[in-house]
Length: 230
Image (tube, rainbow, N blue to C red; front, side):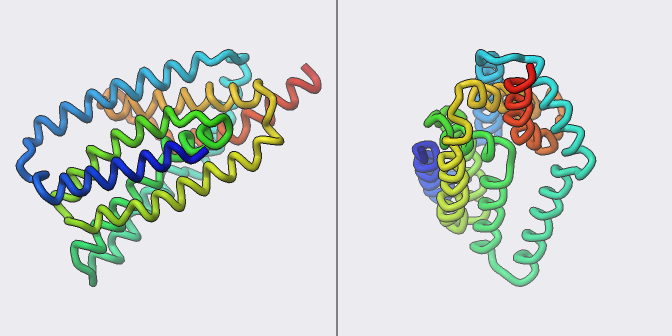
C-alpha cells in the first residue's frame, strides 16, 4: 500500500548522504548518462502500463478531456509558480539548509509521477511507478545534496507524509473502484502520462504532463458511464 513511498524515502536518504559526502567528485557527464538511462526506463514503464487490458478509446477520450481541462487552468504553470514562490521566500532570508530542504521537497513531491505512482500503489498495491521514481529521486538527491547540503536529506519527511497520504486515500477509495476495468483504466491513462515524462527526460519532447493529470479523474467516470449505457 505504501511500499513505494518507503522505498522512495530510503533512496532519497541514501542519495542525500552520498551527495553530502562524495557528490561533488562525481562528474556531471556520469550523472547525465545515468539520468538518460533512467529516462529510457520511464518510457518503457509508460508503454507497459499503457498496454494494460482496457478499451483504449475510453482512455483516449479521458486523455483528451482531461488535458483540455488541464490546459485551460494550466496546472503545469500553477505548479511552477508555486515552486518558484516557495524558493524565493526561503532564498531571501534563509541558509542553504532550508533552501535544500524546500527545493528537494517541492521537486520530489510536486509532479505527475508522484500522483500516478501513489494512486497506483494505493489502488492495486503496485509500487512499480514509485520504484522508478525512487531511482530518479535518488540520483537527483545526490546532485542537490552536493550543492545545498544535508537539508535535502530531511525532505524525506515531506515525501513520506505527502506521498503516503495519497496512497492511503487511494486505498480507501478501492471500494468504489474495485472493478478491474476502473483500475486498468487508471493504469492505461497513467501510463500515457508516464510515457510523456520519459520523453521529456530524454529531451525528445516538452509535454506539459501535469496538465494531463485531470485525465486520471475522468477515466473512472467515463468507464462508469460506458458500463451503464455502453
